[in-house]
Image (cartoon, rainbow, N blue to C red):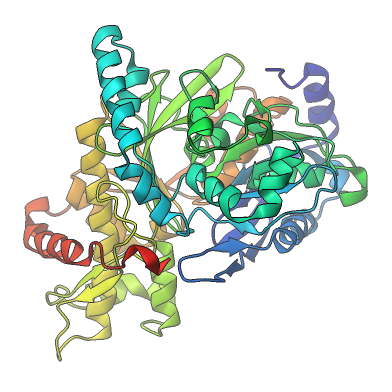
Amino acid sequence: MPRCKEGLASAAAASASYVVGVDVGSTTVRCHVYDKRAAVRGSSSKKVETLHPHLGWVELDPEVLWTQFMDVIKEAVQAAGLQMNQIAGLGISTQRGTFITWNKKTGKPFHNFISWQDLRAAELVNSWNRCLILKVIRVIATILHFFTRNDRYVTASSLTFTTHHVSLRLSWVLQNITEVQQAANENNCCFGTVDTWLLYKLTKGSVYATDYSNASSTGVFEPFQMCWSSVLSKLFSIPMSIYPPVEDTNHSFGSVDAEIFGVPIPIVALVADQQAAMFGECCFHPGDVKLTMGTGIFWDVNTGNHIHTPSAGLYPLIGWKIGKEVVFLAEGDTSDAGSTIKWAKELDLFTSVDETARMARGVVDSEGVCFVPSFSGLQVPVNDPYACASFMGLKLSTTRNHLVRAILESVAFRNKQLYDTIVKEVRVPLTNIRADGGISNNSFIMQMTSDLINKKIDKPVNTDMSCLGAAFLAGLALGFWTDKEQLKKLRRTEIVFEPQRDSGEYKLAMDNWTKAVQRSLNWYNQTSY
């Protein structure tokens, strides 16, 4: 794939002294302006407005998101006391698995963004996971692996679909929105995740593309062959013509149309949010681990140039592609972490998130109360989209402090589950563990997680790692920073959490929580969504 031209890099680096990193997350659109020391010179953020038109459906208004995206860039540059012509380039990090389709000729969306948290395809997912075709595929793949020893067939032999993957939600759209199906048949339909849509809008329709990190997160991309999967697309009746071209993660994607910000700003990085956080944390080596705790929880392990072959539910991803370098990740995640804490705040269990750690420490334990964080089902290693969120073990003596402690403990217990899955499944020895995201500021969760996994966890000064990762990638493309070794020196640690209690001390509490999880499974019937 073409790389950013050296002429562009040198010219931009010489005439401007700042790089912009934007992260379009699940709860916040955030922009930081960075100088060459990776210090934040100006910031702005907006709350992402989610829509819930039906039970289990989660959508975003594309025009509202576009307006918020433009506003945070303008406001961050203004807050830094800068002019737009002082910006060398733009790196964009986006939530993954959230997608939209639009009319190729008019640019008009056929529907709202369908979020990665959306459960409308849950019945379709369960149907596919139980169907005879998938069982046959697994058997054939197992036989092929036996004879060829090709890891590609190991992945196919354990193929499982989830609601997080774009694949079956896109299939649902094609089956249920006639306008999309008709446009696809007429080769007049564009499909894109958030990055692709923003790029299309920023260039006023002149550039239609995505990058490898975002493409690999859709569930319809073939990481072994580095292309959209014709097999899965045919299986789900998705026309190959609707997919965008895939480019390197830091690549010359073109420039923002001058009418938008007054000057044409180079767009030199598109990256999925978790991969961006991985890059921002400088997890560049095999065995490096990144733990992001934001709306959801995401554990990512750098597996180097080895594509992870799943057995217990971890998902293989492309971390980034820069020229000939392709870095792969293995990921395990859960949907509800920050979203759970936000929900608890809206119920007035506490007035400020900052006080939750103190409240949790204000009681000896949760008094047997367990909370199951399953507003969007339970993912790896449970994998049940019909699990319900629930409090169990409530008593007349239960206080707000007990409820808050149970919620925070549930996040740490999910971390333990995901870490154990990684240890069991990933062949690469684990080295550094680095945490980011808003919940990493909660000392109770961080310390309990460190205790449970019996490992040190490094928390950086700047926890907005997706913004920083996007900026790092853009800066490398522009020559703003020279190499990864320079980036490592720019990352600063705030605190390292070390194990203080034996993990066995939590055994009774975690056993009770595991029991609560089991009782929350398959709560909703398939027609609930």
